Length: 359
Image 1 (tube, helix red, strand yellow):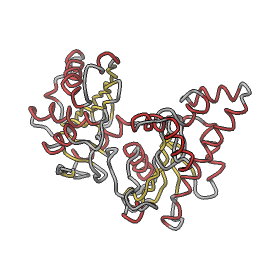
Image 2 (tube, helix red, strand yellow):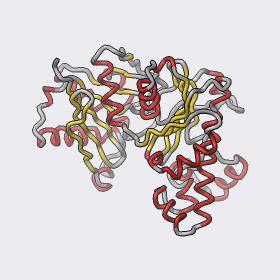
Image 3 (cartoon, one colour):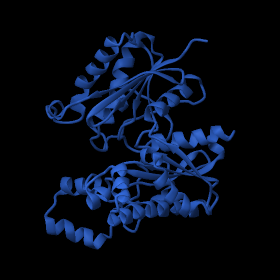
């Protein structure tokens, strides 16, 4: 059997991670760092495209890889208009959307663009898989108390869905036959309900718990008054919510390991805040149960903080009465992208086709 060789590309704000897989085994991986000085030369994320693509190709060449040997290229999915879970083959419409009309600027928008431009001259497919933009929630689940604002399905879909698929495989089931709640625990946290083969609901870090960096859901009155009092514009307000909230706001760090060290040294306030974060995440996991009238067979905890026995222990203590709690620590993004690409190459899944959306 010919071994499938895949190139995986995962752009982040200050780095571009690349990996080479032969089948489901990683044989090479590197994180290419980008300094603030390099990034600041570009007016937008899309403008960084050639710079990052050239670095990817140079790194592969320096390591002796012939790009003509790849069967496909898989890039991290960007912030597109709402799409389905699974694979999408990158086409001209998607590249246009990511370059000129993404929902908002994000480094992950470069994943599909770079993958396409490497794959196209080689005559091989480029894919994205389980992008942040996946939104499969029924319309009823999106309704809020204000007609003009809907809940969004955005979240850590790549890792959460991969974790659900892994759980199904380990238990001899199809993803379509399980009913699980998955919580991604990282700098941001998302909770998702996987039911009958779809991401039926998601609580992301805009309407969920506070996290190491995110403020999460806040009392509206005090928050609105705070914005006006401080005179914050949109950019400043979003920065406060997305990167200056949670543990960062309370304790001055976004590192849960530092917080656990503070607790071990007797910091009672750190202990209370950490317990509050676990309680709030537990509350949001429990929020998903009524959607399927309690028909949930397991709770799965994943992400970087899931390595902490202390933190996952607090969640287990609060939720074990609802369903068994299983730990799948780590973000596993590169592996998840590779496994998604492999399923398409092997005919186990069919890639969707993207059509651009002009607003």
